[in-house]
Image 1 (cartoon, rainbow, N blue to C red):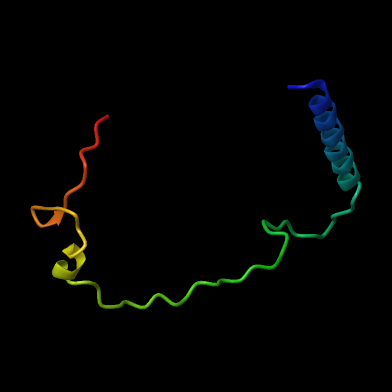
Image 2: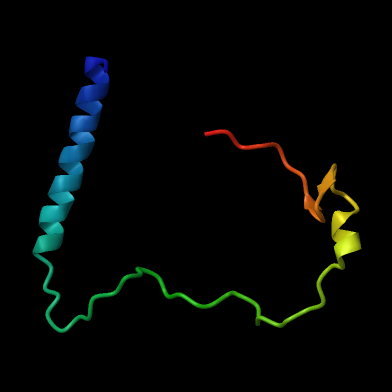
Length: 77
């Protein structure tokens, strides 16, 4: 790694360490720990069962079929 990059990373690392020292001085008495910095909310839709594809429809786009399923290339370890 070039010396100028090492110097840049050293400066950035020292800034991080200095900031950590500042944070150590903050009085957090009575403040509950939180896993998140920002408020969170559930953005998922309600899980509602729906009709699936028929076997025939699912196999329409299969390049090849074998024993009623998709035929895929063999995986060799």
